[in-house]
Image 1 (cartoon, rainbow, N blue to C red):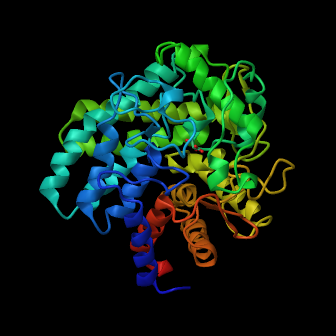
Image 2 (image 1 turned 45 degrees about the vertical axis):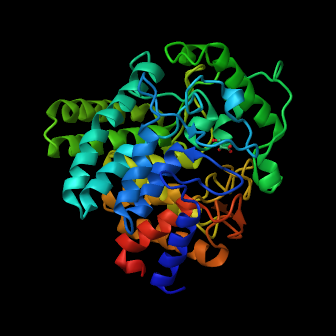
Image 3 (image 1 turned 30 degrees about the vertical axis):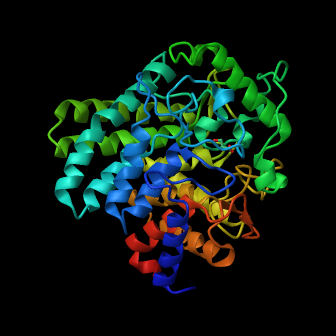
Length: 427
Ligand code: DGY
């Protein structure tokens, strides 16, 4: 294992290389703009060596929040021909163009961390106070626009919103998304990364069909949910939302904003209770719910394990630890994004098998909070073993440790900095 300070130095170099001043790109070439949850998680990395820069990452993100509260999944700060679908395909009509969908709302969690560890207390308080109502408005937006039936949980209406673009979880629901009428396009991602590690062309057509469909509805979020043939309740996504609500409640309490604190806690409590509907005894983990059919989706993916990130009941957390232990028997590195014993598992293809450090970090954090320190440490140690073998890749084969997708990846580097700075035991 390389020296801790060497690793931190290498990781900082990756982050600096992808730093565009007030935002970072996930990696050069493949992702040349600002991505939502990438930024929030990358801010955690910055917070250990450049506090002001960490806050700037999140402030830039929220400077592009929509009037209805949504925070978009990509902000196209600069023109770049090397990415598809670019701003003209989304056509959301904004000054600085953005996409019209969102991404996992992890900013509330990140901002609480930034606030608690800040050395510059005055600046942190000013910044957190300014971000608090914006993050809260985003959380309220989820309930208003992505949970119109008040179930307590938000649906995603495009796989890109989950961040887990081509997960096995979406395969069945995606059959309802047509491909007729999709304008011809040229993919750019497969020019930057190995096509065998990326989603298929068939999936891309459906991704674009949904974009065209929402564009025809003028990106009106009061209409998109009901009009989408794809409405999925993802336990991982909701766990991120509910954890962020819990963290925002705590932050609001400290900043003397009792109304936001109370409302955030209520959203979290209602949501955590509603997550019981997603529990599967068969798999001993949570599953996605297809809101169109009303059925749980028979796909034991990492989405149902990421649920550990929020405050789930003790027996559920215990079961998820057992689930992780079972997965460890069929792979070398935890946590695979899909169960390696299932026929759909594809070890190097994006979210159909590979390990992602950001998800590992969130699962480990949740399990540690629930008292499962040993499992959390095993997961974090695996992150470092992967880095040692294959550098700062986008994702990794859970059996081979092969580095996949883009390289010199910002949030991978950020997670290494975060883990090494917060867990002495691994040093
Ligand atoms: C991509 O372009 O692959 C992204 O995951 C979409 O956000």
